Image 1 (tube, protein in one colour):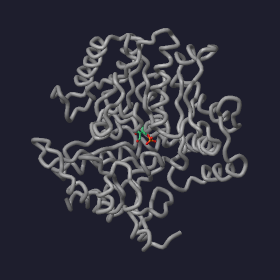
Image 2: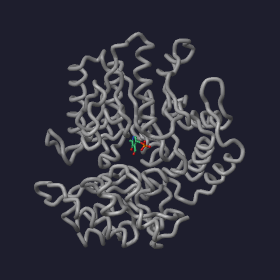
Image 3: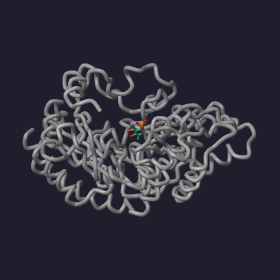
Image 4: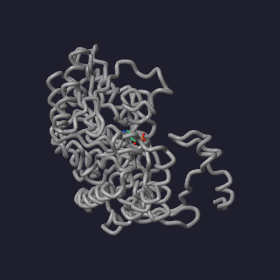
Length: 448
Ligand code: PLP
């Protein structure tokens, strides 16, 4: 390992960072994290803080999850790689598909297609949705619907269904035939509706209108996050997702839930689908499936997909990744599933989520800079920062940065994304750790 002077000298200059301009990372080099334990991370100067970000919404079981580490180390010794492409497979990925089919049975999902991460899982679900309709003789169903402010990763398909211009404009032209429905975002919406249930109805009507305008027979699938994550933690009214499912069913449109964040306990339920009581046709998962220790993902399939793809000699899947079903990733995922269930992590996510959400609401009473607090479903919370509560003018980047930096100096890593300060800590967070995050945020807001 190079010494810390070498690392600091080269930091931000040789590596192009996701979602950052090379100039910005050279001018303001990122924090260098060199170690982690429990729910804490340590930087190159030895400063140790509670990780309020949970890696990137993925380290649900914290950094010291020994069963997952052991599973990875052992699998590297036994079979470090073998492909699942035509004609071969590996034992661990078979076992994982069996365990996932049990885990997701209440969501009506029973088959797995393995990927290398969240963007791959989204891309897989979009491609299989089109193939599903072609196999049924409805080749005209090629379009996709999604929610504004949704985030679906960075491949061209995922970027096309993304509902945030930041991830789209520079990469246009994207996939044609992708249409975005207003999100049930109570704080800001084109209808100026502040009641969540009434807003859900307006968004549902917009969905119906778009389907009528496009023609149901042209639409392959609707993809949505059960709770919008990167877009600023936007939970819909509980009536929303079941009604979306109903509309999709009525029009023969597949429903894909993008659960790259919400699957495996983060919302306080085992999946986002189960939180809202829906059964999607496909579910895209990744992130916490391996606790962030190995790049891996799984798309789970519902009965409609089975009906069309199984027992069908024409249903060849012309899609897959070198690392689909990677044995080391599969071993990590098996250990994660077992730990997630043994610890019953959704229960703690719900309890600590309530603590953080209420703590953030108390901060909102104290600081005008906080315009809105969203969450209340497990450990996904956001505070939207404004420079003026009356006009809801978004905060400037420098002030938002100050909140993050001062919180860091006071013991917690938190994430600023645009005007939103997002909290997505590990699901094994203790009451004391949650208090540390809130105290650090208090200091951050006081400084800003
Ligand atoms: N979908 C959702 C809902 C996400 O939050 C993310 C990443 O944050 C992705 C897809 C893309 O996942 P990845 O970054 O692993 O490709």
